[in-house]
Image (cartoon, rainbow, N blue to C red):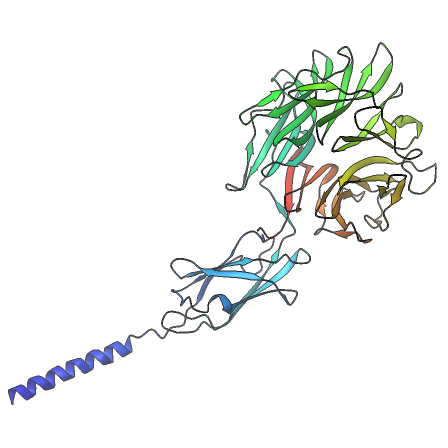
Length: 486
């Protein structure tokens, strides 16, 4: 009788344990606790993952296939993976949207389940992908000081140079900063580019040659304008001797271009001869050599608009007498005498009353293109070896203001033009070489568009730097076009 009673008690205890085990089984479905970007967010970046945090660990099986992402109802390719604790889903957009900004909808299906098999209640939210993504904040060495000129290039990332005013000392100094993607901040490249704090330097022109950044600058030394070129040696800026061809002459607004050599082109005024020349030099080994012959000379002054180089060829666009109503011309040299391209000035409409100006030269796939302003519009043409062949289509449709082309670039069979619409707003326009249609990259950039520059990264994605009035000073800002990173 005792054995039976004991056995009965043991069976009752086991039954109670089984019942208790059944009562504590996980029957609660997982919940979405947080999403990044949040619902309704704007300006989201394509090179950042979309994060979904859950209330408990998930079963990894099938999770990646339970996520869909659409833009304007069309699906985009994605990758999805769980974090090491199985509580966070990381979603990466792998396909570039056709246009930006764009509204994204992310949907999580009930195929997502926890480790006990409980399924997620279907969940979706939407947010907006930005078009132009700011890179850091204001670059000014001192945010209270005005910036007077800016240039931009790609050197292991975006690199910006600018001339900045110091009202306390009446000096202008050239600074440089490189973008650090790991810290999402600008890193000063050296204390300053110019040779000393006693110099007054401005109008920097930036080029990357032989793997290093080079900066040409106009410096006032003991009351006379000099041209200097500095290069970054990995630790500091090394400045050249004065490049002036005539050391008694003033030299102004140098421009750099990189081809088989590095070229510098600038204006040089000789008071003794009462004339201004457009002169050039090229880098030969570690030294600068004066190019022969001069591009042109005239007693009325010049405006050099743009230079470009490819191989042994150097091109310069300039107006030989800005006060006479002459249009802009393009000249070429391959080391000897300069020759003019075409029969005269760039001309889009055949009307002598409208004058070409503001030329930007571009070499793309071995071909030379010119962009310029004329009669309130931006025009473009290809040099076909015999003459200038106009590119069809409107670079930017008319909008009530006088348009100005600010900078141009090329990448992967595409021409890019940064245009001021005449109302102080920048638009980046592009056209595939084999197309006749100009289109826009994203929306407009609000900016003080009288100074803005453009470059592209190795993938062909554009980056823009410009000066804008903020807080009582002209400041430098940079933005890149939102895109999927490899």
